[in-house]
Image 1 (cartoon, helix red, strand yellow):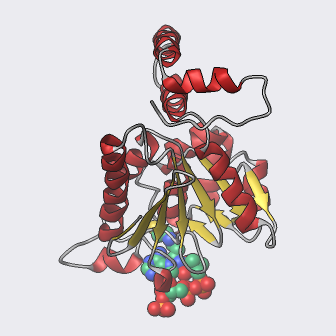
Image 2 (cartoon, helix red, strand yellow):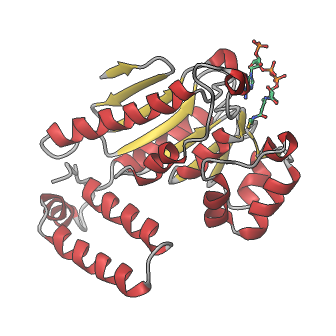
Length: 264
Ligand code: COA
């Protein structure tokens, strides 16, 4: 199933239950215009609608990638001067990625700069091609990352990595990004497509309601006190015990077979 927006292509693979958002402004290295912000949000909403209409879920994880030579080169510098629709940071959009119910993985090649880096950091996980380049160029424009990137990178990689990246505006390699803890896996050119897809498909094959509970749990662990977080985990655990997916998991436990989780 596919859905086209002005600046984004979205699709769902019925076999793997993997949703895909492809940023689609290759001529501008997928620079973020107000329209692209809106289209990413609409694609997430489409996945959400599909899941609410499904018996179980249609989408159990999402991969986010860029069409053409880059993941995303950041805010569209041309739209800063657009009198009709000027660019302003919209932290709520990347936050919607962070708060989308199921895992979102950024699959990154080429430039991943500024707002594009912020978007990748709002995702749950990042995997990268060895050619990927990361950075926050904003300070060289007299700006700061305005859509939450500073907070996301601090949470993902800690204060010193956040300050190093944001103060220097250095463009760092995928290898350095992995050393900083920003990227989970770096793949060579020949293996990138297969390995990155296998990585996200593996996540999409897990029990969706469990994934949802896990995402909530990790996200909330950074925001709430420990008692609240522990109460959440116990409550969700008890709910998951009542699911068909738990029965599936138990049926396959200890056998050389793979459960087909359905998200119910
Ligand atoms: N906004 C608008 N257009 C952008 C863009 C951006 N952030 N990044 C790239 N583009 C456009 C270029 O203007 C160019 O368009 P053109 O072919 O119509 O001239 C096209 O994308 C290709 O970019 P180009 O600069 O020719 O590629 P490059 O490989 O030489 O350099 C970058 C790539 C990413 C290093 C360079 O484009 C750049 O520095 N972009 C701005 C990055 C930035 O500061 N982002 C944060 C903004 S807050």
